[in-house]
Length: 409
Image (cartoon, rainbow, N blue to C red; front, side):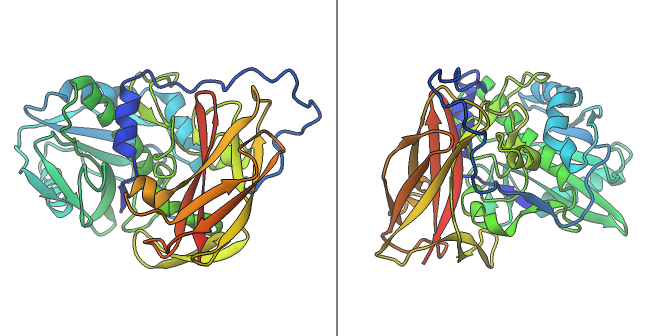
């Protein structure tokens, strides 16, 4: 069970929907740049999404489900149909994880009127009834029932409320021995915005969940790509989840309508291969040349995980009331138009509205591939998770990249 509740997610969607969100080159190479610099300069590795060895979908197929009276029925049908033909987008997001081509099945327009409030158990019971009738296709290991609820319905799941604690989710349940139902739920928030924006939000959320449903079809019963490598578990304090869509959802520029083969606003998702090659890890069609500022974190810290329990990961240990210095290694996968600007954000004050846990100072705030910045962190108070996550932001022109870290005490 994976919730999509990344901080700033809805705001990012609204911002993207008001513009033609593009993934542009960060500029022409600097004529004065040192040609002898190797690209990328040495830096700590990006996170990896790792599998628990459960299955992924070899031939995924979507069954789109909408309800009578929904003003977005036509948009949903068209979006899902185009997802089935968006081969470059789909393969670019999923092929490295062993997922095959996507097919869109004929849409189902249900005449049922959903209750005003639904739990995940209600949705499972309704799906079971429909599958047992002759009107719904039977489930198999490659079937995703994609349910799109109108804004008259509030969905509750895992102790959270749709549009408040999460934007969408995917899940599974056992229908009979050896047979599972895999489904994705896209609730609809009712903000006072125009229909085009609601369509953008629907497509962006659904693209995230459909990709995760294919790369981790059985999160309840036999999970696949659902975890982070041990050294980067602290990223979950900011991303909220650790599946391939969750890791990119909070970051600037990940929602794009400029994919080569789909016109809807969709999300780029985490690529282990791209990150390992020092390219933009949010794929396909990532920022190029890609640049970032990676903290060197050599300590082992403990934190409280968003989904419960504690975990240990790489971070920096600084007692409350004291300061420590972290090295930032700047790198890019090719020449950029010049130096980029580096800043840091205390996560809890910026995204959760809590008093700041951390403050930051730098020996310099600009640099480029091969440069090193010394960042001094002062811990003002212990974080709500038992540790203090931070967000390092690198900005060049209109492009921004992000790296996450965590302080333990």
